[in-house]
Length: 261
Image (cartoon, rainbow, N blue to C red; front, top):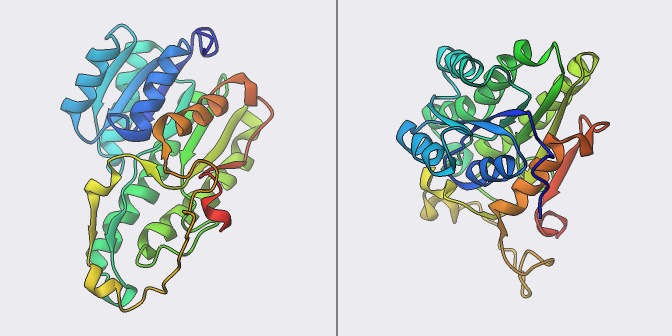
């Protein structure tokens, strides 16, 4: 049972918050006593979740993380509603188009870069003025892909953005430590979410480049199945709370040993 005082008095700003890992984190943070800005591309879904968890505890905000003006407005609304921001979970992301590099269009490349990398940059950039005075925690959802795992053929655009997120987060951790702002990264493996809804893949083209790899006993040894969004949210809660008060520039892999095979 999570203490309802672990994040008492804190305000969290979560992107990609209406579903999957973001939704699980919203629920976890509220259980721990925080108030939460539920920021999502789909405003109706964000508002629905805010209504479900209690509008005195949460606000639903529609915003595209790759749109600078929308992100500035999202922070302004959060501060107007709750008076402060203490925790930022840069979680929004998409797989994009899964295809061989030679078939990946510039448009598809730009699209995944804008959401995953530019979106993370804008989320963190516009958080800083709200965190500098009192410090706080920034958490980034990256991935095993591009960091410890390179066997998902066709994921070149996605994996590149995820490697970029790790590098950017570590630069931010070093730069912002003097202000008491911690920056850490979560690298999930296969997690049961709806991220595949934003994925386009051409299996016929992928056959050209895929090197067959067999896992007779499964590719997640710890549990024998994909992880849950709740398991990722538990790690986010650790990074958000004072339990990780001396941890910054770190990454945690939540993948059941998938990336070690």
